[in-house]
Length: 288
Image (cartoon, rainbow, N blue to C red; front, side, top):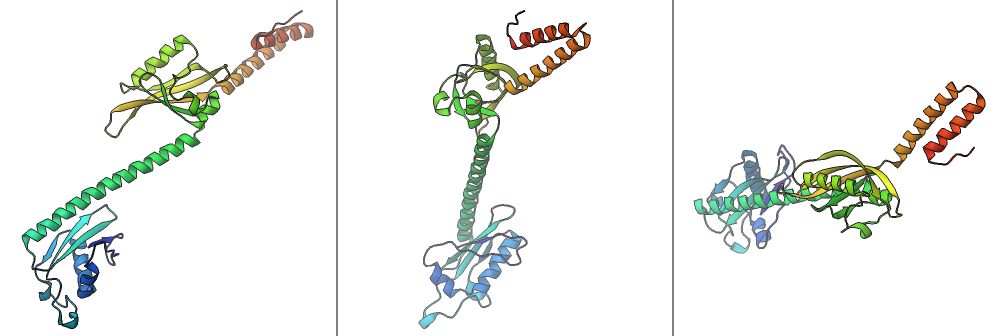
């Protein structure tokens, strides 16, 4: 039987039994208040308790039905600290008197349960972290990708699809779409550094979009490790700079036009110079 308490202090522990037959028959022959008292003692003390013969304890058993002999004599209890908020007690009832051998077997079972519970808790934590990570990647407004040591894309989130117009199905398994050869070399250096444990905080370059246009992006590259701490991939986080660059160019153009208007000798000269500056900034030809 496994009794588990979910609350501290253990004034009224929550008892939950987990066992196989004939536990139900056994519990019917043992006074539940007697059993609960010993479970509480084991939980409070944190130490194993062995009762060689429960028949020698006050009101340990209920009168057997039809003159049958009591099913159990010995009892061993072993506390198992599962976490700071949760503890359990293994209770084993023996048909014979119990001694050091039985106590050792119950304590060994307790250690096995504790190890298995710890592993389950770690797995639950990892699954929770993965769910949080997946939700963050899905909802992020910046592009997030994972690449291998060769720069081949292994994962691609929805924001990355929106920025460059490339779906995950189309781009996973292909090189990261850096536009120029020189910038590809810089990106490869950053990825190589990530696999050596180094991070690149910010790098501005141009990437190809699905439409064939280049998109200005700012990206960072960081190492990604597995549970053992080995670097297995690199994370690439990038954002679209097009809007910011357009805004910056707009501000520069406004300042240039304002300077022209402030220093022009006449209105016609100001108009001609302002139009020429606008055309130059927008890369248009300005005729006479």
